[in-house]
Image (cartoon, rainbow, N blue to C red):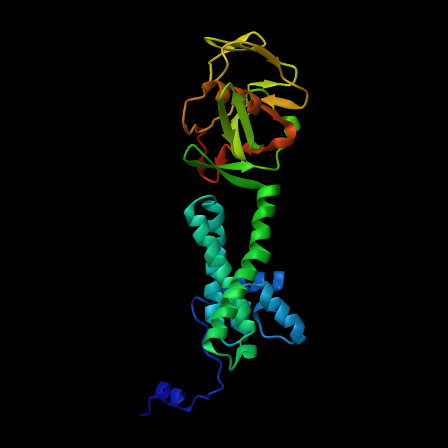
Length: 301
């Protein structure tokens, strides 16, 4: 007696559709999403003018690998690109963010080089290396450096203060700043002189609480500083006498500086310089620190 099941298997047509796997239904949401956002336009092979295809391959990192016979590598590089972009934002201001940015630029540059692979056929090894370095530099300086500057100017920037990195919200408005708020601001280079001593401050950024706003009266005392009659603790190098009134469109923020001494100690020159720096114009405003950056609470020094 013949084994029917065996005979059917032996005589089965090679065109008989394969049995659906148990995990096939798990992919249905992904297929629906691809149709919804037309992701297949980016990943499937399709007819486009060569110039459009080249442009799209240069703009979308790792897409060119799929078009030139490396679909799995394309997906791996796209996933790596996305993960390192997330890492860049998570660790911004830290060495890990610099590493993430380097990997991001490398993947994008490799994608562009893949589009130019045929044009480099027959080129010497030295020429290929030089061109690869040139593409890396161009991608870094023409795409990612401007993007990073835009992020710092419009949304956030890292600022190193007292050995720690704080993320500053740069889309805040100076008009919303109140007395007691922490403010990041630009510091211009200044020179202070007193008697035969002098002090110099290089350009950079400062961060500190707003002690007084426009119109407030400040009196310097030996045991502190009085703001509109309210006594506050004295800061390093503050004057011990005298009074000032905060000018219009200015804040009074006592600077936090690292003092490097050379030659004779000139406390008077440092005091003069820091008092001048403490009068911060609103035009120097950079932003205010976030209370949290992702899951990290930002502790101010």
